[in-house]
Image 1 (cartoon, rainbow, N blue to C red):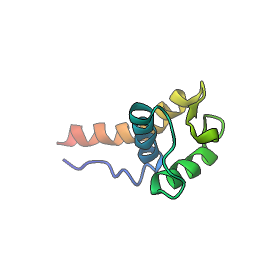
Image 2 (cartoon, helix red, strand yellow):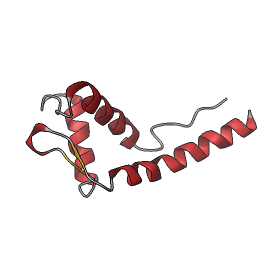
Image 3 (cartoon, one colour):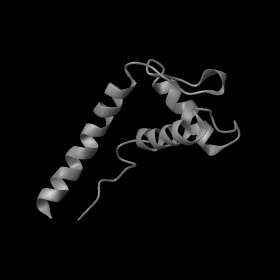
Image 4 (cartoon, one colour):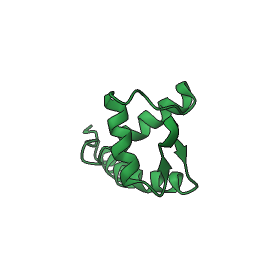
Length: 87
């Protein structure tokens, strides 16, 4: 079964994984400023500035964050479900 290309659905899904890991394993603290994960989160926070903040070395999720995450996953899941129907 072909799996949806995660790159096609943007780097947002990769950023979600980093955010999840930082919240679960590091109490929401950011990685070091020279790390690849920090650069990904910095670019992500600029695009999603109404939904997330990375000020003061901490991740802060706003009320709208989860709704936007769900909307981001819709196209990915649509493609995945279409692939399952074919398989």
